[in-house]
Amino acid sequence: MAIHPIDYRYGSEEMKRIWEEENKLQKLLDVEAALARAHAQLGNIPEESAKIISERANTNWVKVERVNEIEEEIHHDIMAVVKALSEVCGEHGKYVHLGATSNDIIDTANALLIKDSLEIVLKDLRELRSILKKLAKEHKYTVCIGRTHGQHAVPTTYGMKFAIWLDEIQRHIDRIEEAKKRILVGQMSGAVGTMASFGEKGLELQRLVMEDLGLKPARISNQIIQRDIYGELMSILALIASTLDKIALEIRNLQRTEILEVSEPFGKKQVGSSTMPHKRNPIRCEKVSGLARVIYSNVIPALLNNPLWHERDLTNSSVERVILPETFILLDEMLKSMKKVLSGLEFFPENIKRNLYLTKNLIMAEPLMLKLTEKGMGRQEAHELVRKLAMKAFEEGRDLLEVVKESEAMKYLTEDDLNSLKPENYIGLAPQIVDNVIAYIEEVERRERS
Image (cartoon, rainbow, N blue to C red):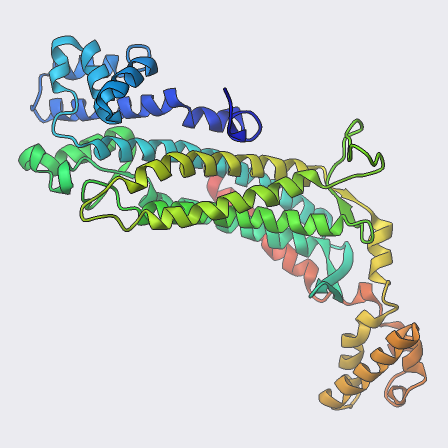
């Protein structure tokens, strides 16, 4: 019976398959098989035994049901796997798990699960990057009002919005690629990490196992991979969630009825409300923002898992059974939802222009101040004069430039000066900045392909 929404509502089948019980068991078996092969290579066990163990270390031979049955009896999850694998290997089963401790298997298997999960996250991030790059190109000159403190500030462009998100997504890709060398590590170090159970060839055995599995060996461990590594992983995933939350929040705000500059896509048969048939709610973006809160909250347990008693205790184990699959599956849902939102984003050009002129040119106060400075007025004096004129225009509900025409500012300004003060003319180097970001991203993409 499904209980957690990730069982039936959130996440792709591709991501969920990684964290299903059978695949997790398979990864544990993969590690046991790699350990046997390494032992055989070093002459510690017969090659025939390693061959049989490798052939039978899969869920066609070792069933989840049998492992659970043994665990119910002995109350030890990894020993249950060891016993179940040993059973199907006959006389060769005596070499299963030779010299290893439970976390050699668990932590190395976790690294394999994380590796597969990060590949899906990276794929989605790169697809999201492509969508944002396209939007940034298309809307490089789409002038809109910029807002600070929720108030109209000065003009910007939608290209700038998308390029900012684009650059941030690239940083997340960089973070994951950079962190892989620290995160994708396994161990085969025995009890308390000294490798005493593996003898003089312990370091070589660990190297062989990790090379076999496509992981890096931990330089040092004390029975467990140190949990600062998991803390870094969870922090990176939470940072990605925060960017998706940021994008979703901006779209939600811009979709407000009073603003309505953009909107997430709305299906022809989509229902917005059970009682208000007219509603077009930003439900995908709201879902993204909501799920981000769960992912944020999972960072704290990951940090608390780093300090453990002496060489190890078990307080991290139950936590990680929850936060690792939950975080990856929820982030997967968020990424795929955001791809749908941005690839189908609706624009309302008439509202973008309406909002640009909503304050009756009050947003031209800064360029007006700069124009006065250019014409000879001191900067501080110009600021104070324009401030007073702007307050007067606001209080009287008039156009700022009309109020300026009646003021002492006209000693410095001409009609042409005032006519040049249009929002569309005050976007600075926004198009060039966007082009710079796009050029950088395209160079990164070329390097990825080569």
